[in-house]
Amino acid sequence: MNYFDKLPDELLEKIFSSFQARLPLERFNHAFREDNAYYFNYSLQQPLLKQTHKDISNLSLVCRRFHQIIHARGFWERKCRDEHVLLPDQHFPEQFAAYEQLYVNNPFHPAYNLLKSDRWTKSNGGQSRIENDPCGSHRLYDEFGRLAPCRVTSYIFTTFRQRRSVDLRPVIEFSVCVAARWDCGARCILSLSFSDGHAWRHGRRFPQWNDKKWHRITYRYGEYTQYPSWVDVSIAGSDTQFWAGFYGVKFAQPRLRLLLRTNENQTNEESVVTIEPKEEDELEQAVARETEEDNISVETVDSSSEAEEEEEEEPVGDNSFDDED
Image (cartoon, rainbow, N blue to C red; front, top):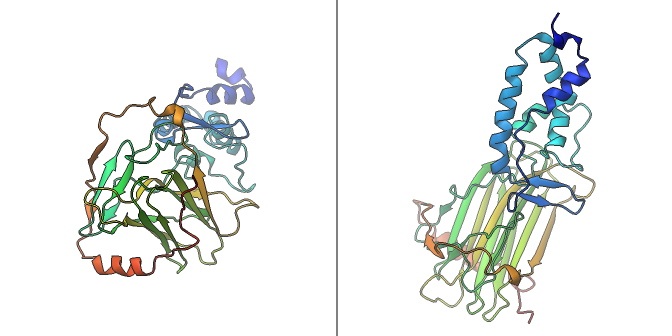
């Protein structure tokens, strides 16, 4: 008999749970919520979680007792809660047992984004650039307080597309921030096409001499009968004055998330939130280069006729952002 044999299971579980590579709370690496809970930047946290999982999994090979303690259902659930992989209001059915998989790869994490910045395709003939510091619009920040880059269109109506697999059964949430230069009118069309036939479309126009504010547009889809296995995301836009250069609509922080179902998000819902500028932070985060080339892939087929059709069908009227000042 060794010393570990004399220790109760509860104490061994506590020792094993203490194995973690916790991120220190630093500026720009975590975000607080209204309930004072917080979550980390997932791209920074996930490599540490994978390493911790590997270390603990190796420990479970020592003996059958260690294996039983580490692979018990409650062990990984507590790890997810203690290390802010799951938030206090995220709950699963009692029969759910995949907490170990959630610890390593959590698609329900608030900062997990199914859309990848380098996976967009651009319509043939379209023009765009990356602005690390938005020209003519207020700055935009992510939930961690970091300055967010954006894509900006030109006078040619340009469409950006991306298809992502969504092979679970949660609520599907898409969101994107859009804005225009204060001195040039612009327009954008957002659309989602799901494999089950459901579609959503949203058009916006910005007048010249607008308030240069960003607007976060969000759509949640949860009222499906046959769960969609994929969704096509399309973001299109241009300026409305045919100015040479990149004066068209800007978009940033496109996000496709999977949400756990609650009583509040069961129905399909669209929302628009105006983001107030943080003037006090305008000089706080400097950028090395204001703009750069947008080198995403270009579609091989000519989509100019499709773009013209989209322009003709563009919703206007109630979906216009008028100058509030």
